[in-house]
Image (cartoon, rainbow, N blue to C red; front, side, top):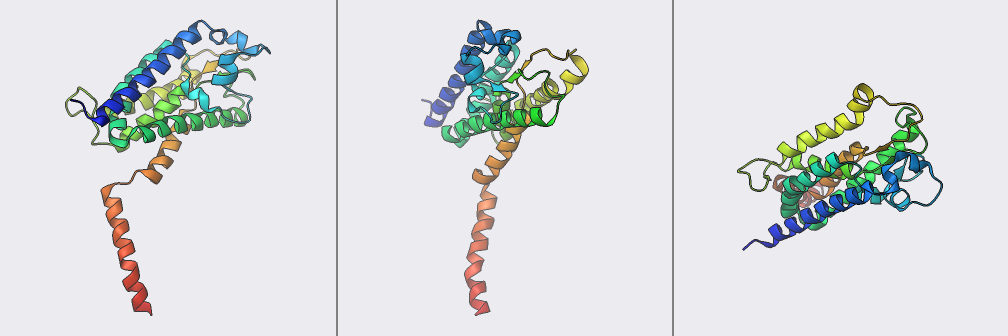
Length: 235
């Protein structure tokens, strides 16, 4: 019989997979699938609620739920089962969800900040962004720290073997492809999935605050145990 941790990990992975699948299906039949429609002044649920505008002054935490193309959807679903599931089994579903939402939020902030600082980051003021890749980049970053965590159904294969290629993919999509591969025309409205650096940054901060190794706890315990004798010697 599977343990509570295994059941929780499977539920989280299934929820993440369902989210990506539903959003790509809805996106394919929505106005947001046509970048030209992002210019419209009419209210649009997918754009106004689930996307981060390049001209916005604040990040959108809900953009971590959105995915813009089938390739990202498939890769993210694989990450949900290969990385998010074992991490949830080790850390618990609360930390897993906190990393996902926090990494997505910081990715949205990173995109807004980059759009305001660099004029070449976006093509137009109507550009929009999803941050699901940034949320999964948080899991990929966390996999680099969890060397004792392994991919399900594979014998002793660390999750970092899936996390490292994912970070390289995000780097290529955001920094290499737009400059060296794609032919971008000024004024064209773009719908991207960028800002993964924010997700990496958030995960590094979150892990340093909440995830401590056994060695860290032992060193801290020795430090506080040595404080009273030293204080007594000074008196």
